[in-house]
Amino acid sequence: MKQLLILSGKGGTGKTTVASAFIRLSEAKAYADCDIDAPNLHLIMGQAAAPKRADYYGMPKAEIDAEKCVGCGRCRENCRFDAISCGKGYKVDLFSCEGCGVCEAVCPAGAASLKPAAAGELTLYADENKVFSTAQLKMGSGTSGKLVTEVKKQMKTAARPDAKLAVIDGSPGIGCPVIASLSGVNLALIVAEPSISGISDMERILKTAETFKTKVGVCINKFDTNLANTEKIEEFCRAKALPFTGRIPYDREAVKAVNSGQTIADIECPSGYAVREVFSRTMRLLFIESDGADACL
Image (cartoon, rainbow, N blue to C red; front, side):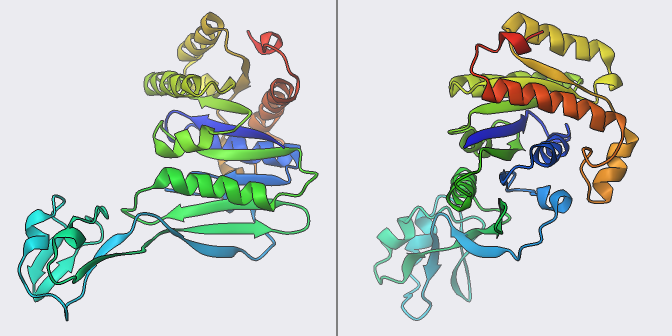
């Protein structure tokens, strides 16, 4: 099963809009939303199957047993994260606790201990035809990269044996979720925005992908909002010999489609026509083993 990852260096470029259109056009039997901080792919795709939910446990959190606590204060004195407060007994602020275990080590009464803590929730929609894997990270929780890995693992485990393509909607930025998303994929399509910040963040995410030796392609969304910057992105792709898969115009009909729970591939609109061209070139880049020269500008 080939894995196609849709990425952007920043939020708001239309990454999920492109990913949902690709899922519809490819009739993908496996797909995932790895934007675990703010997942929204499910709002567009819609799922008939009832979801299977499971807690995701990240780093453990400290807990103080009030009955065993002797009030010596060593846990509070040694906590470098200031996660322990003293009011009516010693208590742990779960948002500040990093699960380092120092309090457990210094407590003479054995009152402090580390307990498993749910850091998020994994969700899987699966029926006889397709699987959709996603998750939601709890506010203030860490280990986001590990949760992304679990989302992808859940998708691959549940996918049908005849599934030839998995489409993954990645996270914005270049942090841990993106690094985990890049692992093991066959192609990352970068959705760029023709703005100063969009160009800068596109270059950053391309460097991240290069570090992992991941094959990449680039497309531009809302290209007509700044034609000068669009030309800069295309010139950058030419200079770096990066496969360029096309332009998608700014389209008010796209907003209406998303608001009604549809993809831009479901309606007749300028962005829908353009995304079909981008999809066709991206599939050529993904499935035809070559140096990508045929897709370059």
